[in-house]
Image (cartoon, rainbow, N blue to C red):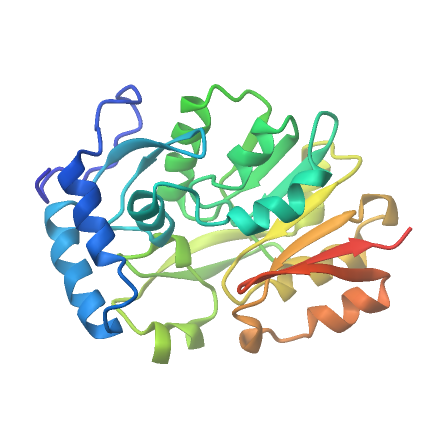
Length: 281
């Protein structure tokens, strides 16, 4: 597929854009970690121009329309033929099922939300980036999932409007933390102003009476999502399990880990990028 065919398509039926063998081979090459980081980046830039997407494929039994030139998760799904968060899924799966509630802050294209809904959970998926939220809606529909509510907003400590910094090669890595856009993650970043709302207000609007699993992945803004929620929500609404991205912890303004411990949460699992906390009975 040529670079010209890169417009967002949320209307054509799933299967319209098959990921052919050459496409998969090219993205596997771009994902080879035995190559130097610089060489891998140059290969990825070239592959992105020729095989940007969209492509339709199944990974771990779930359907996705992906745009690998625009998103890290999409690239991983295409290159590896599986979801990139298998270890995290294994950690939260025992807490999912019929009657459970899964809240996904930073839902991206739905690799967590669709997984949780597929396990029978009621899902509230929250995504700040409007275009990514449209991709999420398509993927939810492609999987025939009905019990997924999608909210296109950002989450933070208060109602306000903030600049969301985005990099065109990885729309899933959008951030409110401008300092994060330099150094290791330097790129062609640009801000888009988006609405920010407290999680307490969103949960109230959707009538949530419990949260079994809360997943938060918002690129260094995690503390400003979780801590205000715990401080203002009724204790009956505190999540029983929190899956928290910690690889951007240096950009937090408050230490989530110590406050979670003080509120009775215990670390029960960890991966390279995330930690799992369970509320002690």
